[in-house]
Every structure is written in C-alpha cells, then in structure tokens.
Image (tube, rainbow, N blue to C red; front, top):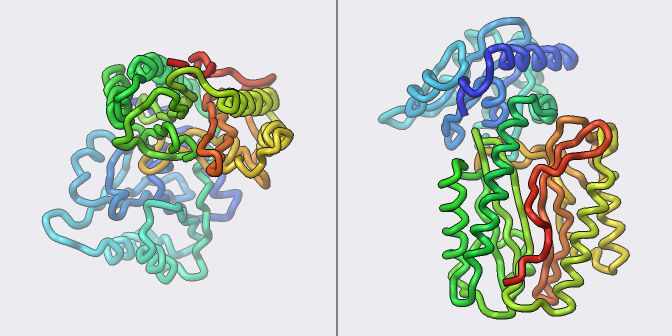
Length: 383
C-alpha cells in the first residue's frame, strides 16, 4: 500500500469525511492506532504497529502527525501521505509514551475531547493504560469512527478488490490439482501460496485454513503434516490480496466419492449461502442475511454447528485479520449499503461427527441486490 495507489483528491476527500464525523461527535482530535485506519488516511504500510504507531488527526484543517518507530522512517517518508513524522527508538530501546505525551502536549491535544481508537490488536495494554491516564476525562473511545467511513468502497478500491478476487479464482484450480492421496496438508498449502504470489497477490493478513479427514470439523484449522487419504473430506479458505485489498475464497473437497452425510452437509451449507446472498442489498439490516442463513441451518437441526458469523466486511487487512467491524450476525447495528464488500460464509461444523462444511464467496452490495465477485464454481470438489 502506498500514497501512490490513490489520487491526492481521494485522500483529501477521506480527510474531509473524517473531520466531518469528528465534528458530529464534538472531538477536537482523533488518535488512530489501527493500521487499516492509518493506511486509509495516509497510504502507510509500515509495521510499527508491532510496537507503537499512531496518527494524530486534528478536527480543524491542519497537519496529520504520525508517530512510529525509527526503523520505519524511510518507508513512511517515501510511501505515506503524512504531514509530520515523529519517531522513537532505533538502535536502542525507548519507551514511546513519554515522546507521545510530549507531542500531544505540544499540539494542544488535551485542550478538548479526544477520540481514541481502542482496537482489539495493535495497542499494547500498558500503552492504553498510560494513554487513559494522560487524557483522563477528555478521552472518548472512537474505535470504529474511521472504519465505518471506509466500509463503502471507492471505484479505485473496488478495482483492487476485483483484481484480488480474480487471483483467488485463478488459484483455486491450482488447489484442486494439488489434491491427491499421500500429499500433506502443508504441501497443498504451499502450492496455494506459490500460486497466489506468482499471480501478484501479497501475503494475506490471515493464514490459510486447510483441514482434512478427522480435522474437517475444525472451522479455522491450519494445515499440518497430516497426509491426505482416499475418502477424506475437507475444506480450504485462503485470501488473495492486491494493494492489501483482500478477497477470500472457501470450498469443500473430497478425495474419492463423498458419503451421503458429506453431501448433505455440503448442500446445507450451500443453501444457507444462497439464502444469505438473496437477502443482501442496499438498505437491508446486516442481521437479515444472517437470519436467512440461520433458518436454513436450523431447519436441518444443526443450529449447534453454526459456530460463527454468517459473513463480514472485508478490509485491506493487516495481521492477524482482514475483517471489518461490520458483521452479518445477530445484534449487528449495521445496515448494508451499496459499495460495501462482504464475505458470505454461514458454517456447519460438527465435532461429534468429525465433519464440517463452509463455502466462502465475496459479494459487492448493490442498490438492487449484490454482485458475486468470486466466480469459481461452488460445487463440491471431488478428486
């Protein structure tokens, strides 16, 4: 990701939208810690989030100030649209919090209400505690302010997502050809990664899920040394990226003819996906597609196997996740809007049977429905 991936006008419009949202919440400053938020406003791809990294955004039209470790200085200066860069550390350890406090004091951040992102990752607990003490009653949690603004994708962003989806589709044929008895799950995963990288994908934020045989009941199982055998049933999920924008794809497979139960679970998962997709359109509550998928799985008596969300928004992800806060699940406060890109993946995983099924595709929400971005056949892959 780089500031060169979008026009200066698109970045300027993003800043305007963030400042408008800050004004609506009465915020004088916004402190961003999530690398997706920082990337959306600056283009930065830097990895200082491993230690400490933030972007300070004033409500008034003024400079964006980024703080990161010294090791990322060159990359940020070359690739990010940052008005001022402050760094810490380098060839010796340095606590970043005193430097952060000094910058905040210099900029007058404490003069009013301060919106602070508190992401699940990327902000160490001890740093959060120190920041709460520093800002005191001025601190307002604003974790999803930028994320919510970035859910609807621009034409440029959609172009990158379409390229990622094409790479994911092309790679599925390589995956199918790699499936044969005697090969380990890791060997097959290696073929997938090789195909993705050779076709221009970056490394996805989350690792591949690949399970077979008795492990096919694991919803997010990593590949192991287990060797494929005739009669195995299993699933794969991987992400392809282009300029960090992610497309995901998941399919079921079987070595040899599947049993009646394997086919039944696959068909239930497929019908649940179809029911979910049929509900997706602009203006629909994010709970509606989820409830449609849930009804299909529940009617089959498998509600206990519906172990996670029916789908979620896809971000230009950083490890460990490519997901956005918008989920299609019970209690979601979100409404689907044209231009959002979401995964569709209602699951059935049954530990007691050692079996599971999940089909994963991505769709673009449109005014009247949705567009399937991943075009690979959704049939059970039988080798």
